[in-house]
Image 1: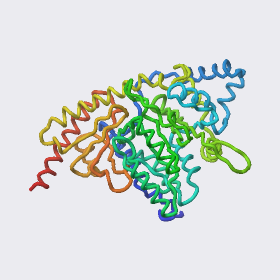
Image 2: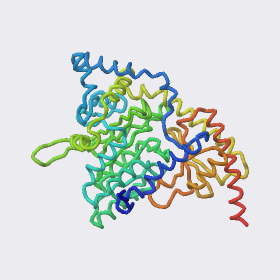
Image 3: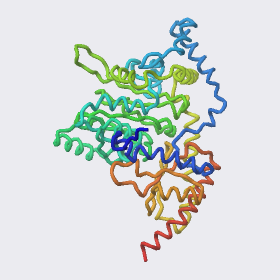
Image 4: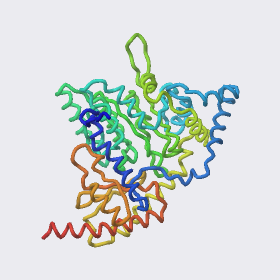
Length: 439
């Protein structure tokens, strides 16, 4: 039997970013009875009685009445491979215009297998040479860094402040790259309740970021996964809605709002591409790349998502309103439980801190000890609670004293019990650490 040495395989397989997700799945499997604040997965309670065939029928009816297709032709669309760019592009484009004021044409949209594929395709198109770099607001979603690692795209970290990416650092990173003969092609940013930081960019900061993008000649990869969780009246227009110079590529997903198992995402890429004697859009190029990766996004999955949107007036915001309310209530409950169980203990006050986001799925907690995988194992084995170490979310060595708590997957009794267990674990490790470092 032939043996393969890891040195002969792609280097990304040894990257801790890729290993972090596998490790969490392994730990969750090893401690199935532990209460887990680790996964950023959406709660499935509202999907328990979902009739998927009903939503498929809603879409089929739309094809017959709005597009004039025969019943046979409409059903064949769901049975065939379908176009690489997608079937439901017009419905998605209309929803983005209705909900966010994005002037999006269907031909600018590519329907992908989740937002992860959208990230992969976009980076493949934008970064053809070793000198092309991706900047990320750090701490950052590990999926974008993982996609860059798979493609051998260099990554540059830019601090994520409470107002978004540090613009001075971004300028400095772009200029340093140019001095080395390289080019920062794009910045990945999640301006609304970012995973894992919870940062929300204000309107003025969004305009400032767009100005820097033009000044430094780079594109912005906007991840809008958590924007729907904004409290009523606190919504800020997406960067893409403010974009007047096609600087923004918008990455979206239906996992959090519709159905994670459908694995449907999308990318809006309306940037003009010239050359070869023909004008086209970046979306056209992404569709070509997709034809060599997943070929197409499952038509049946697209039909379910389209049916859900159509039944809510073609509005993603309308579909997500009740889900968002549940997530905000969970987040409020998690913060309150932390105040009661952790903040009220004199031994932990000041030593353990956390942020207080108003939306999104996550709370960041900082400890006086390294929040690494060994500490996670101790917590799971001794106290029956899981969380996510933050180090993989950072570019460089920062974040080793931070952990992430997710509120999305649990109900309030589980959150209450989980925080109580976590407080017991912190009570066990923090005073010991304090005594050692003060003696």
